[in-house]
Image (tube, rainbow, N blue to C red; front, side, top):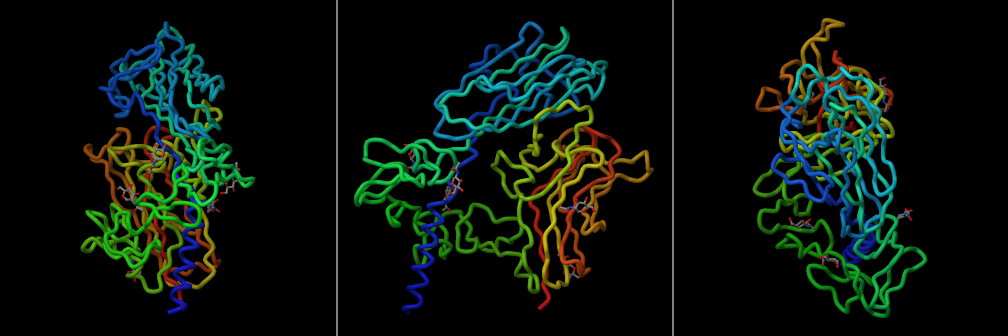
Length: 469
Ligand SMILES: *[C@@H]1O[C@H](CO)[C@@H](O)[C@H](O)[C@H]1NC(C)=O
Ligand SMILES: *[C@@H]1O[C@H](CO)[C@@H](O)[C@H](O)[C@H]1NC(C)=O
Ligand SMILES: *[C@@H]1O[C@H](CO)[C@@H](O)[C@H](O)[C@H]1NC(C)=O
Ligand SMILES: *[C@@H]1O[C@H](CO)[C@@H](O)[C@H](O)[C@H]1NC(C)=O
Ligand SMILES: *[C@@H]1O[C@H](CO)[C@@H](O)[C@H](O)[C@H]1NC(C)=O
């Protein structure tokens, strides 16, 4: 009994510590513009839109465009919440034989300058099929803390060319709610504290309430308002009060029954069972339970709401395409939104010789390795005319192809499920023991076309290893 209590206390302590250093809120989508045909353009120097009828569905709509008489347009966003960094993602078109510079500026800092000097390359994305266009997706990340942000789009393209923006997103990496200003997302990254309640900034960067007062969401209170509870000198979320109707103790992962439509998963209440589980009567049953001595080597790419998503965040490496050398200082966009599904890669990792790879140590003997991912076919997989082989998307494990997807689809952008492109699951299941004690996963292709045709897009990747005893 004593032991139980000690254990619970220990859990509570670890939970409280985790709460304090928890990366609380980041990647807040602060603004999104130009995405839909019907959206009105407000706050910009120019507000004109031009109908674009093209080959890429992302561009096939009313697009915000600047012509040769409109060389510069800007907008100032105001009332930004406390943050330490912004990230901007811009999908843009340069229409009709692009020739000349295009520039993106944040406040007075240049994010990137493009110099288009290859008229006639790429494809006719917008309108006239006899003149070629360009389509780029890029993102930039910069430290920033001011409550206003001015974005300027500039160009000096040839007289018949136009610059169009099909999507612009601004994300803010916000401060922890305990901080008034910060240099990072955590509660010990504060650089200033709320005024009026005698808060002090400790040398370790934490905002502290005076005396017996408790820190709750940037204010000092005498008791925590629900659904939070006191933990030391701060208020933390009470896992028993949040989305849970029955629980055995106020420690995390102890919910026994979730409220409303929430699903119970490992003692926590979540909105939807992850794809590596089955929903049985509102409880998510992990598929690992079906594996003899199973162990997750990797689980990731499940996010549906993220901004700085990139496979690098998961320790993956990839090679990027830049066939014409047009893309300066850009980490390239590494996701696409296709038919309401957010996918890794897609446009960011595209065409010939492109791969995504990672490597894990497997220090124990094992009987099988399962790799499973959701894919969306982007564009048309046909024939590689150099090798005369059918084009394929491959999952390679330790340099051997273990699963592949062949042919199909149509030459339309972004996984047009309504046009015969497919979304599904691709799995590799191998019983070969990896002798060298590591697993190298490489997702790659043998595509023929360098760009715009045929892409890799995936999400929800899991790797399960069945260990030997
Ligand atoms: C923010 O806090 C983390 C620990 O929570 C620390 O590692 C990091 O250095 C801090 N960032 C800055 C800029 O101080
Ligand atoms: C925390 O404080 C901020 C700013 O005062 C407020 O906008 C937000 O709603 C508060 N959150 C909660 C959970 O009370
Ligand atoms: C509880 O539900 C809300 C609303 O869906 C969600 O935003 C929040 O993350 C959930 N909190 C926990 C601790 O599960
Ligand atoms: C995995 O193997 C491929 C092919 O040999 C190699 O190009 C890649 O760099 C390896 N990946 C890692 C993360 O080591
Ligand atoms: C993987 O292969 C092993 C051995 O053939 C088999 O026992 C297991 O059921 C397979 N798993 C899946 C998910 O197909």
